[in-house]
Amino acid sequence: MEFSIKNTNPEKLAADCIIVGVFEGSKLTDAAKMLDAASNKAIVNVLKSGDMEGKLGASLVLHGLAGIAAARVMLIGLGKQAEFSEKNYRQAVRAAVKALPKGVTTAGFLINEITIEQSDTQSKVAQLAEVVLDTTYQINAIKQKKAQPTSLVKITIVADKTEHAAAEAGLKHGLAIGAGVNLAKDLGNLPPNICTPTYLGKQAKELAKTYDFKVEVLDRKEIEKLGMGSFLGVAQGSVEPPRFIVLQHLKGKKGEKPIVLVGKGITFDTGGISLKPGGDMDEMKYDMCGAASVLGTFKAIGELDLAINVVGLIATCENMPDAGAIKPGDILTSMSGLTIEVLNTDAEGRLILCDALTYAERFEPSAVVDIATLTGACVIALGHHPSGLFSNKDALAHELLAAGEAAHDRAWHLPLWEEFQTQLDSNFADMANIGGRAGGSITAACFLSRFAKKYDWAHLDIAGTAWKSGKEKGGTGRPVPLLTTFLVNRAAKAK
Image (tube, rainbow, N blue to C red):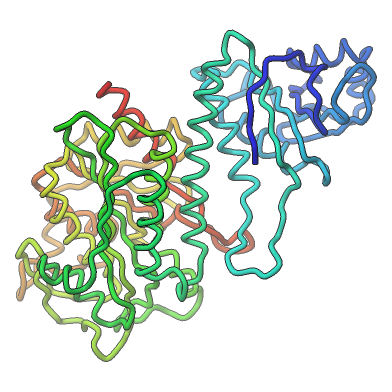
């Protein structure tokens, strides 16, 4: 899909359909007023008939208006003007895209002109592009007949001449995040017999080739040499070989300490010997969405050519109940040397992440953020709207929370108190891999914190936000928007 910014009067924009907003009470936006004047009050006359009241997300398509170059004019409801927010704006854009008539190949948006408190042209254009890409995304994983959700091939966004540069910057930002989100969705939606650890390694190499990243994809022997006994313990139950992926985007100042992103890449999770219930087990292909979000974020910062140093680490394998699989009661020795009593083999994500967190020390990072579909307990605690956020540094947590708010990809800060650590006590090893039912997402984060003491660290539990179930089953691409915005903000500070 092609996007462009134009400076033109609304009535002169040639397109199959142009989109303008109407607030409740039939209040026209400035662009709608201009179209109404050019069409001899055609819009006002239609609104007087009661066909549309301006409720948020409602739409009405008008055809062949005199004095208007576009073949159609879509009126999109914006809700109450006093309550109009970024959330409502994004909802209106999404509704407009879904309501476009079949056969529309070119569309023009004229709603980014609307004033939104604490938002500017760059932000509004970025959000528009991101929402359009998200709305038109289609799951075509392994379909012989590819579905076409829209006939759209060209989107024009109208902006004032004085704001053209800001609009272009916003468009670049929105398209980059949209591309990263779509990659993360694609990877998550692939079946686990295709999206294996080896496949993720190949995808990392493709990204490196496209964006000039440094890349290493380590195999089992190389992982063994590193002493990643905890990671390999999870991998030993599968015939699929594990991979440890290291991506580096080094566009910051020389000597600048990197930010490290660590992704959980369990490409299928049966639970191992502690087998999961059979219902909905197919969704365990999404247990690699932390890894997918790291690759998606790298695509976004590659598109932006962001002036920052970022390292991506992905530990990826399957968790299977083979005869060689780890058992409850086994003790693993992690890369750090700390020993772990495995009380539940379905608490495997932390077992692969802990070795990746130890590996991160060699980069002397300014911050480390791990991303993982880690605990069902987080879904119970927070539902499917925010990701869970834990950190050993409040300043880093606040940065990530602010990035999530700005990106409409929110997280919620949960405690990481010392009182929870005792739940991981073991009579036989340095720690157990679970701490019981109480505070399950917190004790999982406490486990990880023991391997992240040498740097500022945060953990994002995305078990409730990485994918949707039911009729809309599919990956969401989260938290690529949050992570990309966090990195953009860090790059701006460094500059």
